[in-house]
Length: 397
Image 1 (cartoon, rainbow, N blue to C red):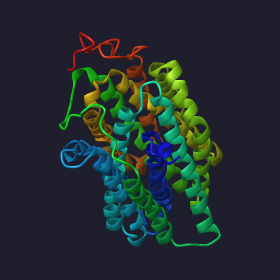
Image 2 (tube, rainbow, N blue to C red):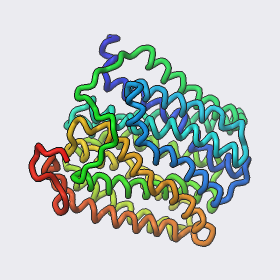
Image 3 (cartoon, rainbow, N blue to C red):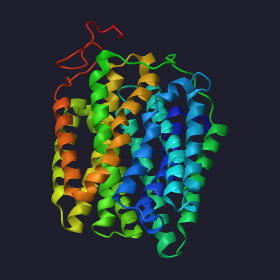
Image 4 (cartoon, rainbow, N blue to C red):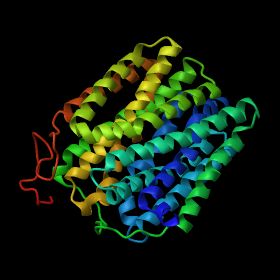
């Protein structure tokens, strides 16, 4: 029985479960904590979110750390940093305090996310990868439901201070990471990974989609939630309830979305995602009813699972030894826009919140155009319909 639980797939699910214990706590409380305790406006929240994304921009550093520590162990260290950064957040209710604790939390979160992608693509086969990634989203969503429920309970019934809620969520992440480190073996690499930055011309579509995904993500993470609190005056309890609905839907839909991607292919899945995002962002720009805004928020969140298609597209076109290095580079590319976009759009927000969401609509259109250039059956030598690709399937650069 114990040997069955020590499979790499089970470890991935356990680690995926540990992330939202901290990150869902941090995300759910952030807007209310920053406004109520640190008197943030749109400008400060934009700066904070830009700072949060800097470790993601520097995710390529994972490649060099792998010269000194195994990938699996580095994943555990990253989770512990994520937990510690979350744990101490409540003790620093000021702009500077939030900026510093956010950077600590973010280093752990972004480095772990990079490693999770790499380990999943290495440990799980191409046919199973979309479904397993969907399961990981599902179990993370289930954990998030537990966290959202606890936040509602501790704030509404027990009236606990922010300090103790942050400490509980962060502490649980540290505990699970430590237990996994102690109880699971170090799995051997199936293919020795490059320990240097890898950039290949034939991966250009993956890089482009990843860049646009990072830009679009900021609209949701930074400003959709802020809209709920600033414009529609959602309380901590209301935000937690909204997150609870999103998580509940992900438990059911994420594995099915993963399975659907495996059946219809990455091209069709991404087209569906970007058409939907264009409609959602355009609606955000003009919404005046808090119930409609909540509905848009829920629909927007569901589209996140469709991003599995970008990762599985890369898995299909990649040389196996490129996976770790390219996952790290991809995460950096994903965060190029994230470093400056929240601060820039935070200033735009002060003048026109609607314009922020219309920028998201434009990003969705650009992503849609890119997705139309993905072939129905991507593989080495058939990475794109138009543009640079390998001359032969065995070529690596």
